[in-house]
Image (tube, rainbow, N blue to C red; front, top):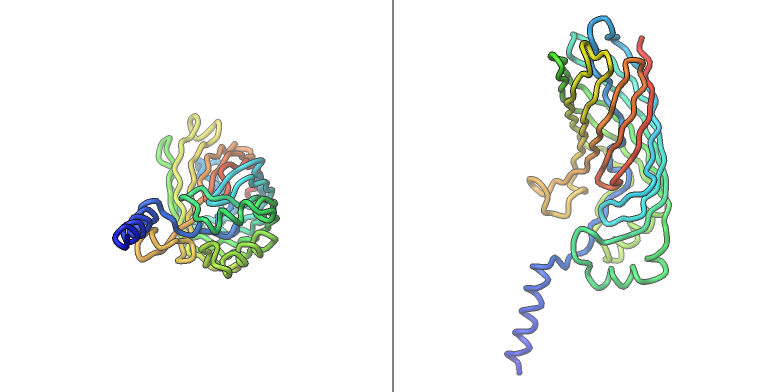
Length: 266
């Protein structure tokens, strides 16, 4: 009888290790880089050294890491200055807000969290809002019909709302794993590549842009080197020579977002 109990216990432990019966990992909504895009390089006749711009973006319906039914709307203001031909510096302020529901979609849910999700609280929608300040230094190139570049900098994030309060409450009671702070500073990198449409981008530019931030608080212990995790935003955007641009993006916490904006050159 003792051998059977020991075997059953051993098999249960092995099953949990293999199936991933760990606590769900939760991130702040503000850890996702919002879709602040990088003004492309135009031909010598079109290029201006200083640009400012504004964007509006929104998620009509989306999912993220252990969240579902994400609805949000936001916007950003940015300024970009070019120097020494290929170098640039960009600063941006962005914010968004909306609502979401808790979910468990990155691994099998353990019993305690599943019980909470089946409660009235677990089925409710929770509001959130977040602000970001971004600064990036980089360089980019326009070679023939191809554009590419990269940069690095920092992103400051402030998050609040019912979702943040409940996330912290669940973490303190041991239901979820969520070490993230509501206010954080993240190292950030960006990379982009795209194509000019027509000679000298006469018909515009289409680009793929990715931004990533890094922190130990974005990892459940199994991500990247030394347990440092990441959150990312990736977008496909079209720029018209008039300064109008628009596209779609995806991020760690919001599967699908629509973006429209306008830049002004000086």
